[in-house]
Length: 391
Image 1 (cartoon, one colour):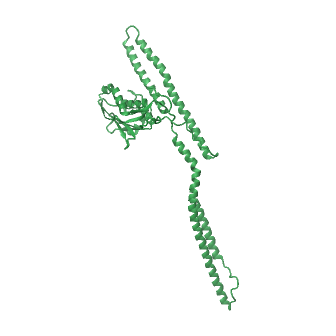
Image 2: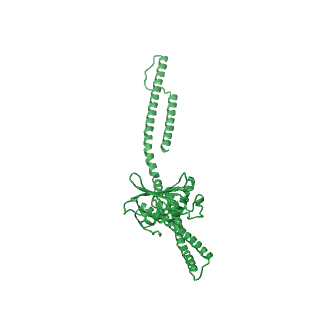
Image 3: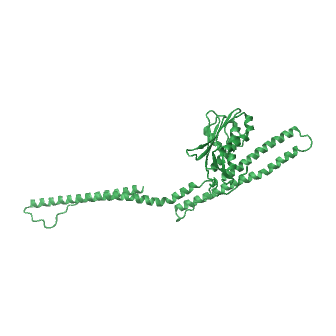
């Protein structure tokens, strides 16, 4: 933009110079001066005057052309120089904005404690940086308050749940026969209390995972974790008559991260494949290396089930989102399973992919970067310290 304006102004200036030079040559009629010799006749004198005027006009035209050519060359040279100067000056002026942009991109929900802290004179860029710092401060306070509320509420609500469960046990343990209606009601209440307890536990895990602070880190084989999750749910799998294909589970694919959270990730993915499957269906599980250099490990869990809308499948990674007739919330599940999987995957700098199968069911792919260096920093933890997530 700067070069275009410079070129336009230079062209206008050159045009004005050409117009002035052209007008001067047309209006200049200067009589020759000096001793030109004394003409013998009036006709000779008039011819001599016309000849000198023509030579003067040609000299003026030549001089004007030389000036215009020189001006055009100077304009071209200055255009090139202006490109360099404009690039340099614009870069110096926009450097603070690039710093603000780069710093803002680095700040995520897990690093809201960082600030731009731009130094310099009190100008528009400094005001913009201070405004962004203020916004980050308000966001950090809001996120901390939300996480603290969820964590505290989850802890505090467990006390009355424990009291209610103990009261049921005491009522059923009293001497004498217990009416069938009372036993049925107690069993139903215990089931609902267990569901609420699982929901509170999911809230707590989700809040702490989003906070990105955990210390129980180490290297573990993802295939062994998934196989353990399948073994622990053998009764649920048999109850639905599901067929499990686990030949693709590798034993050497290892990742570095939170042991508790990665186990919870595998549990939730398997639970989702079981709970939202159809009786007599199937589950396919695979753990494989990704990339030519094996820089990542993927967990792929496919399951049969009802046909889902791919446009809405991504919502399953958000809390309390369910799809289809089997995802209405009337059965097993709290709607937090895949949202916890998404939070754990993000905390480990991985990627979650949800894909609706054409013939029904869901394919869940979790890809986590492989890190074999045990001295590596805990994923998702900017300070390397924090709370251990309770299972």
